Image (cartoon, rainbow, N blue to C red; front, side, top):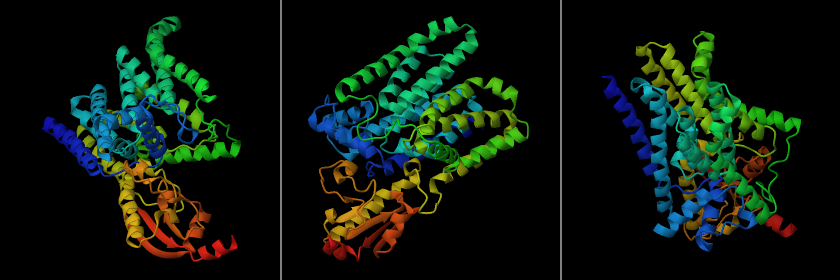
Length: 472
């Protein structure tokens, strides 16, 4: 009975992912992927796979492993959205495999399927692994590094840290956090500082040498280190910004269904289920979570650069693991199934929550943003059917990107970049416009409104356009 239940849960979870991935094959690049992946991969594809010195407009300061892999796939199999999704499907398969190995490592076969499903139903992880995102690679290599830290595979840990560092600057930070965690875990076990250093240093060297080489390479070729000449990344946050960042961090940890994880944790603590004994038993998981949390907080809270919910996907996963451990340990077997089913449903519901349109969202961390691609096509169809030139229409991020970067084709058309004085204006809650910009849009004449789920896209005609033209 238990074996059939385990196979059923594994099967249902994998089948759902397979269906959602197949349905995503017509979805293009979205959000930061347009700059981070599409534009850089296009540059590599068009100028040679070793052309890593980019124009400053598309340089985001990251290592270029992922754009290189995309450009390589395009070179071998043809540049298309389909080929891009095939590459990311391979990454998805390996990610599901890593989650399975991690669940089997941490749980008996009797309960591993519940942890496996709860991790994969986490909205941010689900969205990033099903779409075309750099974080799909960060998640894959991050899980690999974490499970080898919790286990004892030195060679695989070394490779995972190197791959993680090669994906992005954030990958480097996570790699450093995992290094710190693995060092602390080994130090607790060895109780000898010098012996721990001797044992751990060889595992860190490949990643450390890569990061050092990358810093030197950027300094020589760009004149600066990780940041670009067009960003304020790295500027210290003032006190008000620090407080705002703390509030944003708390929001991301409870948003999109994650609040139910915390309510379950609070219940377990209040009922004295989780205490010092649990902390001692699961110290490895806790050390990894706190280490990578400390490293990410040191950057996200103290600097001016904005950060999204996707920055903490590995943290959400570790919280799910710890909660799953507590449920399995402190509840009767007959209650475990119902608790996990309830949490899976509640967590998955976070993909479809509705918010006020003036509240900025981290849209790339729920699968509800899939509706964006349909809305975008409907809006483009409206302008085409009414013979309205695309270049006369204003749109917000990420809709104003050239079509070729979103759809991976040769269509060079693009909307104007957020110009509310234009004759035609697209407004969508996906743009995260300010209250003033939203008010300005709604003063115009609404021509068409499209809605799917919690996303909408409206087309406005600006009655003041000709007056603005004359005044100029």
